Image 1 (cartoon, rainbow, N blue to C red):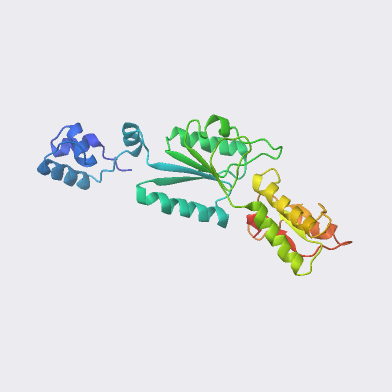
Image 2 (image 1 turned 180 degrees about the vertical axis):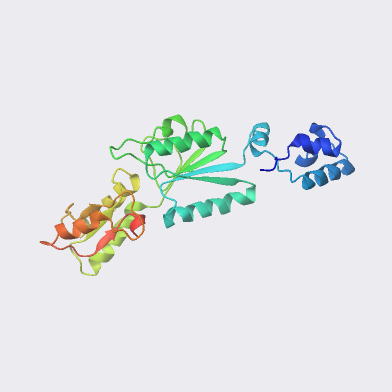
Length: 260
């Protein structure tokens, strides 16, 4: 592997000090036009690229936004990532994307790693454990050490700005739509119930049934697995259909984006 050119190499070949070469490449400070041209030409010949980490330490900004999402394969999350990138790039920022797999320990690892890389901010779809416990990063990293915004989810008691849709209303409207089609026994497929969106969606589903004088029966509300691959059928859905043969449900509302 060829040796990577350094700022010292550029300065030596251009016949300047390291400080002058740095000013010429960075576009700051007093440098004559002839010296700046000589430094830039030398940097181009040596295929020199600045050390972003070193520059970030000096400028106290990495010009980087860290993103932690549950599943990059999800069209919902990939659309969010693309939108974030499109919003920050015109302002000179890059993004680093991490996948938590809805695992609180993996999320904590990514949060600490992004903090160590001195990202300027975090956008996080934070997860909750099966036992209802939030990720420790909420106390150890988010907000207190790195400016943070939660997306798609909120965590009760966490003083972190959150951006999310009206899960209750969306679920309510979807359920009412099916009721107006004449269906009475409506199934629902959910993700992890401890997650804020799932709790809100099932509440909207329940309220729509109650408002239309339909008894809320938790039996047709089936949990989806945290992940499945390719064309593999989520086993919970198959079991829901088998378990309900005595009273077959009508249509199923999918409240988990991975099954959409």
